[in-house]
Length: 242
Image 1: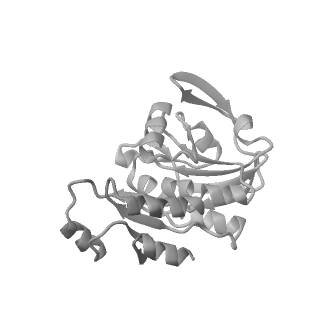
Image 2 (image 1 turned 135 degrees about the horizontal axis):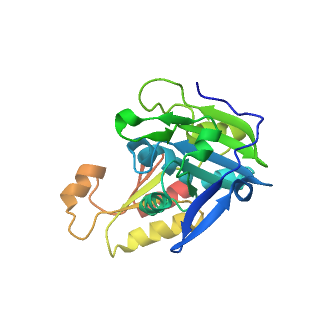
Image 3 (image 1 turned 90 degrees about the vertical axis):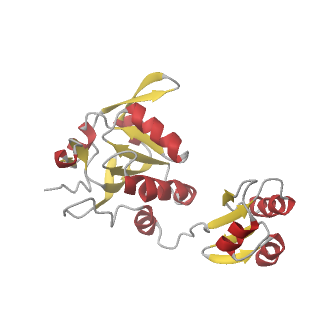
């Protein structure tokens, strides 16, 4: 039976982390004392849901969380420091602190350590998230106890809705570009000037107009999408932004 720890202090443990090739011990006090911290814990680094959705969305919404009183976002997993560092680099998750709960002490203290031996994982953390203020759990979202790896309530959007349901989330912006395109540079500058983050999809010098047309319906770059809406090229973006 998983335990809800709302109103209780987080476990007092020491985490063995690696920074710049050296070991560094980080205590629970160092992570939580005097701060407002979001923790989301998951079964393992590099696993599908963790890599495709859980970690990336917290990383994406980090700025909004900080604007709403959160000091730090911590991703916890029963993995060693080498694995967690490699995963952070692979995910480019610069806005999230990845903490290895290598021996599962923190997860066990939270009542979240589960046996996943059937998958060859051994002891791992159940998936959950929580808001911790000065070392005390204010709110905890625990995934339902059912087979598999449920991912229904510990996501970043659920946490943000709890903290501030009226918080403005960043626009999802993607831009198809090709190297050396001056119109692409113009479009990127417009977005950067407005502080709008975007994902650049570089088609590469060998991409053909046929492939671009198949994806966007147009045969020029850039092609920009905002929140699923096809905006068009740089002139179209300029009109959209007003």
